[in-house]
Length: 132
Image (cartoon, rainbow, N blue to C red):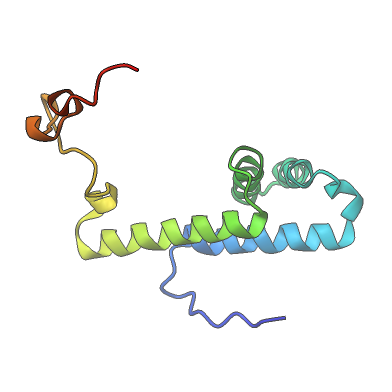
């Protein structure tokens, strides 16, 4: 088993609570493997039990794991890693003073009159925008 070496003092709270929820899923699977015949159902069941037990924040993260497992076909570990990456990137951008930098550069600039685009790069101008 690898040891966790990251300093959690500077980690965003959503990343920390996500790690705790992941460890709860692993713990619950270890002691109740029959509930995880369909993994997303087992995680969803854990979320329901956590909600009823008075842990709504952990239940929300387990529900998010179950959603990502069902819709995006990720494993629990992949879902955890994606959430942690997004949370740390968002925190880094907030601390650097530009939280709006989440939008990729390839997206068109949005103004109050709609999305701005270059007519020289539009599909209609190149002739490839015709329906097939």
